[in-house]
Picture 1 (cartoon, one colour):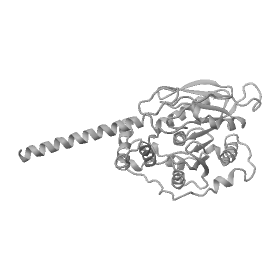
Picture 2 (cartoon, rainbow, N blue to C red):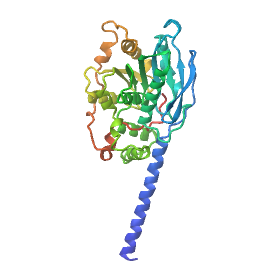
Picture 3 (cartoon, rainbow, N blue to C red):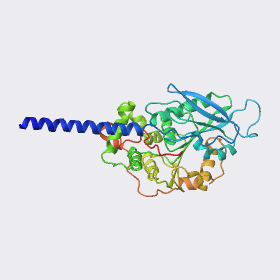
Picture 4 (cartoon, rainbow, N blue to C red):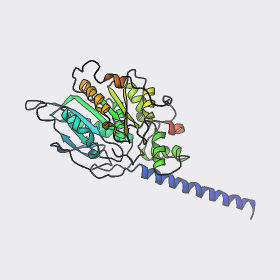
Length: 350
């Protein structure tokens, strides 16, 4: 065989290998970007109304829970509202664990399924941006209700629901406060967690998968900045309380360190709790000891007694080394370093 023929065979074999590898990466990304439709695990124990509202051409399904009887008086009264947002691969029933304490505080509640989750319509390429837009749609729906006070609305988001809630601040979401729980911040952390769960090598997939997500989702240099949750917090003046458990082995609490360091907001309220797993922060008594006074002050607009709720979250110490603050960088060349553009964590339970 001549040298030219041998080179041709080698070239063809190399091209075939590259094509096969690309097909495998594409398939892995598609699967990762398709959230599992988990079954509902319950209904609100309080009287509720099944509701629906539009988002991005799709219909979102949710539950509206009126406030506890006696929390407001008079026909036509407008009530404070908390919107509770689930995470990736979850649904509205799986964040019912937050609602009892909020209901007893006198809030009306809105829980909904993001696109491609629960009972809501499908979306071909859900990402952090679709979570953000679904949160914005939920806020718009809430503000349209005559029984909701548009000046007393708060968000509580778990994991990717928290991420979408903070991104909504970058779009000037008209809410009075945001609480996040166990939220991912850096794309590399999320991708590596998913690859570990699937027992797949981080190299080279952790640097390739984000590029495929961008391609499938139409994310370009023009709108990449909209995915930067650190910048969203830095530029917003909306009160935020960030909570993470040091026992979360899925999304490590160092993500909270990273966000606090990069946001450069003096006094940014944050709290480390001690509970096992990714979906159990509220089982630590310190969670509600800090969350409820925070919401009373900023959503209910009550006078909070001096010192109540403040010392623990304003003096919280970082646990472990914090990563360097994020830097503005070119899109494609540094995709693995850009804050989370799309969730790749179908193993979430909340």
